[in-house]
Structures are given as C-alpha cells and as structure tokens.
Image 1 (spheres, rainbow, N blue to C red):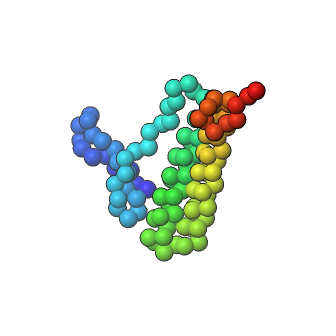
Image 2 (cartoon, rainbow, N blue to C red):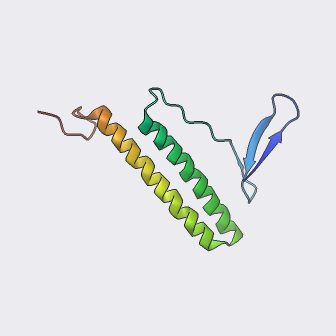
Image 3 (tube, rainbow, N blue to C red):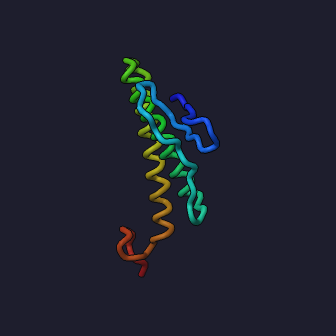
Length: 106
C-alpha cells in the first residue's frame, strides 16, 4: 500500500491506497480500557489479519495467485489467533457468570 498526504497545511490527512487505487483510512493503535495483554494481542492479530487480507486482495488483482494464497492463509491464521486470545479473555472475565457461555461453578 502507498501512503500519501492530502492537503498542505497542518490539518492535512494521511490516507493509504491499495495497489488498485482504493482509499483506506489509516489504522489506529489498539487501546483497551484495562490494558489486558490478551485483548492487546487480539487487537494486534486482527490488524495483521486485515493487512494480510488486503495484500492477498491486491495480489489477486495483479494476478499473483501464489502470493495471494500465502497471504490469505496468514490472514486466516492471524484471525484464528485473535479468536483464541478473545476466548481466553472471555474465559477469565466470565468464568461462572450466566450468559457468557461458561458453566457456573458449584
């Protein structure tokens, strides 16, 4: 992706373009209220998944199917890692609470 600055003054906005010319907002840094390591890891993994999915998309547009396949797989792995981190956090927060999908402690 290519990053360009729109505008000339201090209020200029940075945007990113994919290889096929679509504008995308810049990624923000993950911020969690309680600074849980599991939530921060899930945020990082989701950002990695988004990036790899975009690269795969661009590679398909360029006809580089082998590279697209590689990045699609790494996007899936990053998304799976985010799900695992979120499940771990939910297990810690909601163990024994009704409605969280966790069994109640006796």
